[in-house]
Length: 398
Image (cartoon, rainbow, N blue to C red):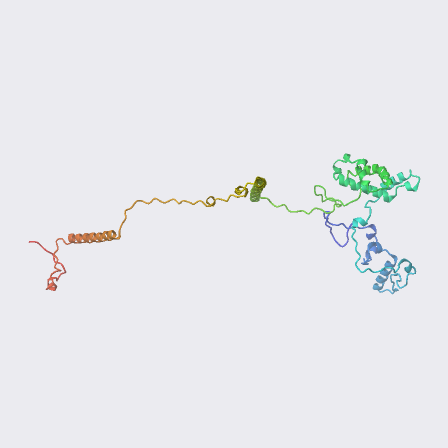
């Protein structure tokens, strides 16, 4: 169909996640007639199926004619008169309700109040008429309620005992194995009806490939299929976390650490069990010893033996204090070379000797430097005239 008002129409891919608009034939305007094209589409505010109502169309046409300037009579949509009283109101609506002092409490679930969830279809109705045609009395005929109850019992029992029947339909249980599901019905007719209905139920179950005969919501089975629009409650898609070598190494390290911790916990538990078993044996030995001492004490009283009762008193061995002491740690003594004892006087003598030796060396160097020179520093009188050219004068030999 060519759309009006737009030059082009882009085709889009049909998706199961987006609803499609359903247009009936009565909703499509006849574009071949010029008069139909000129009629303005008016939003009536009602459903499409009710727009063809006679009074509604008369009111719309009158309003359009009045808008165009024509003189027409105002038309209203007739409504029922609600001002009158219903004559049989008191007959069907009594005033015997007494308001309780507390709220009305109801503890039953929806499943308990809806009754039998199985509903007959065309195949079941034909089979029911077939088995009732052979019955003469009305008491022996199977009613629709009983048939639905029997079918529901079969469905419930097979779901509990064979939840994976769809994998292999040939392994369906026999009536003798399902007969215990009707133990709660004491009426013998239920068992007779169940025997007659079992072949019909088995045939329908096999036709359904082991799935339930009752209609139920369709869920995803196995791989995800987006092309099926009847699938309910689809699984949410999660983005897969990208794995790296670092994350693998961290995971491996965590697993190794967890294994080590679990091994340590198991070892500690085993040691605790051994300790408690040893304590149990120790208590049992103490109890046996006490009983033997009691017998010996009674025997001494009978024989009149006095004294030497120290053996009859339980003396627990005290722990040795020496054993509980922490062993002393011996430190290794470093080897020091043997050096003679030096006194302070020897140190002072060595220091004075070193000073005298240094002075003697400086004096000897000075004497060596003064060879060939004469010292007049010891002559005091008239020294200024004698020493015109310096403190020293060159000495020349004869």
